[in-house]
Length: 155
Ligand code: 4NP
Image (cartoon, rainbow, N blue to C red; front, side, top):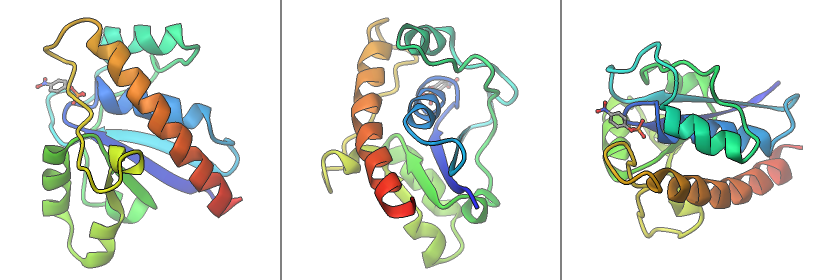
């Protein structure tokens, strides 16, 4: 059975689609499934932001077939690991949890790189164009750590 990992941000068009594509590229497909979702509903059914598609493509990852969806309570049981991009995503997701086991699945993604420091992956949506490059590099670094951990634990 596949180990399931969910990446969550606010819109599901900038950060979490990139995180999904990057982590999926580092894991064997037969053992792991990676998906993403947004806490907000604005971009349901939308493709990722073109700036995320471009920075992924530059790094040989295709995310253009992804479609935005909203995080739902059913995701707590459908996924084994839920990584959120920032502290506000963390609050939004934790509020929907119904028990301790569900809460324990949720982790701020950069805590894997900077334990307990609660560092955000900044939202690049309204920022400078190179914000997407910065977000890509942060996610690439942390996904390398996450992939190693998951492979060691589950294969
Ligand atoms: P994301 O960025 O959470 O990284 O996908 C955002 C994209 C769109 C919006 C907010 C954040 N929005 O408000 O439309």
